Every structure is written in structure tokens, then in C-alpha cells.
Length: 113
Figure (cartoon, one colour):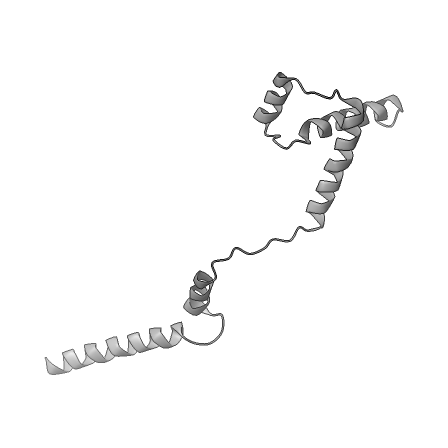
């Protein structure tokens, strides 16, 4: 009976010490890395990559073409349809008009068959 309690106490002590050593080892391993991430509350700053920059440039170009061919005030029905379709940015209507004008121009020139 005495050896059983001593053995269980020894195993428990070794397990607790092993967990503490593992948790507080230097470097970004295991629990120490996750705990340091919890202390850093600031959200990581996401830099815009090449793909996002090109997407923004294309949207701006299509919107500028759309400004030339579209009316100044959108109808409430067309605005509602765009919102329902998921296009909520202010440039969405102009970009769609620019895309349709560009596709009509390419059909007229014989570029698209």
C-alpha cells in the first residue's frame, strides 16, 4: 500500500514537472507559442498582394469606362438588383456598365465571335 501511493505521487510529480518544462521552454513550440499569441491582441496587418492590386486596378478602369457610357443617376430598381446580387460597392454599377460597353465594342470590332 505504501509503495503504491509513493509510486503514484512520483508519477504525478514527474508529469506535472514535464508539463511545466514543456510549457515554458524558450521558442515558439507548443503551449508557449499559443500563449504568446493570446497576449498579442492586435490583429495582424494584411498587406494587399499583387492579385488584390490588379483587381482594384481593373475595377477602377471598368468604372471609368462605365462613367462615360452610363446615366448620372441609377434607378432604384437597378440599384436594388445589384445589392441583391452582392455588388454593394459604389463603383459596382459603373464597372458593370463599363464591362458591358467593352464587350459590345469587342463584338462590334469582330474580336469576339
